[in-house]
Image: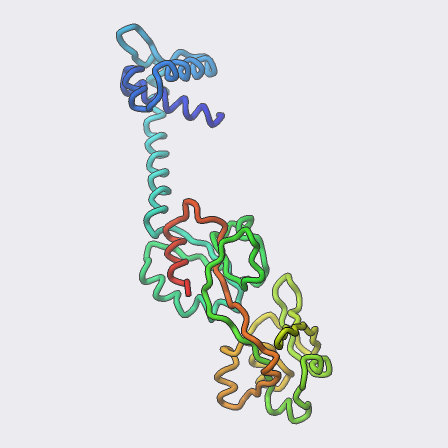
Length: 294
């Protein structure tokens, strides 16, 4: 049934309940002639008279009574459903689907997820961990988290982490047999641990110093897509690794890892939560944004 027929059925339901075109027009906020025109089109389309009309009264016919008996509960269900959906606009409740790269899970989401769930017990936070830079709208996500440089310009982005500072690290055992690199270009002569960013492929290590910037495609005996494995391999002397200072900090403090090329490792904007529009935003998504916002 075409969508406009649902409007005509709603008009029929109102006229049948009010037993008056005039009263129905006031209730619906349209003219009596518009009501009459809508009913005439509906009856012509289905080929059955639904209302008996006189100058004094309006009443459903027998077929009209049959239709009315089915419409009342159906429209009640529709109104209830619309009320529930509309309520999601103002009440933090319902499902929020979030796409998060693994690099952001521990730094952005994990520290705040417990408090968020306790504060909003009626929100179901549905988190998918994936490093692919997929289209969140096409895949049915309400929002995503990623580095600012990867977020499309038509998205609204909200900062959810501090700037991140990269470090190049290696274990003392590795450095016993390999001299520290003096510039990023020296890395091509080192065994390095490569990190795969989902569908984007291997990450080229990025560096900046003053106005100079460059990226280096490193090579080595290991390619992984898990940050914990990068750290573990670096600690075990597999090779040099590129990671955030936050992830390396405890191992640098203990001496298990040694940093290098510090003057080439400049901070860069961290993670942002992004979503397609501010219009008619669900209260549940708004609550999540405020919980993660820096």
